[in-house]
Image (tube, rainbow, N blue to C red; front, side):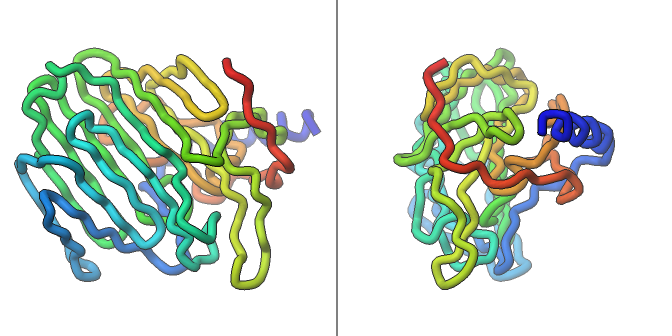
Length: 278
């Protein structure tokens, strides 16, 4: 099997020359984001775009979609309770609300956070882009309301590298995928192929760009992200396909560099084992 995987990986590397795709949230039923800012909830009509500019925000921005949702806390620009809803969809990986990430938090100093403003918010159907500016730099979040795919990204533009800490939700863990040798995360629950409770296996991976992993446990990772770099999240088949990884993009990076189904997808792992602390 090792020889086969090696050959497939070489083919995957050759395909990486294909132009990076836009962020792609996979769903059979479509997505729809609503956002709550300063206590006011907005859900634009289908095909319409909601824009907000240069707004002082207090507390938390709540993002709620058909397939996923999360909170952005202005105090630290962290993302909390990133949740898959389990809404009926052929691409879903859970059947009830499941917190995939308890938190995704950048370690920013008081000076870096001073004067934080929501400089731009754009919401249209299943897409959200939020840009925050501070006295020291810029912070960008992109999200897609999909059941799986490349559906989340955080990007920093500060003068110095930024440390991020990712903490998985309860019941999820990081593990080594035996088919690819890469680190994935999930809850170990096998797919159900038919019936009202049908779902795919919950599988995901951290997707770094110009970033270095500095620690790894069964439930957390820390990363050093260079200026202009990012940390994304990929769920489902795109998380386990035999790709060569992201390019070193440092400007206008998309929430996923993917080949959209042109790369081989290995079988689901069976009874994955949580990682030991590294």
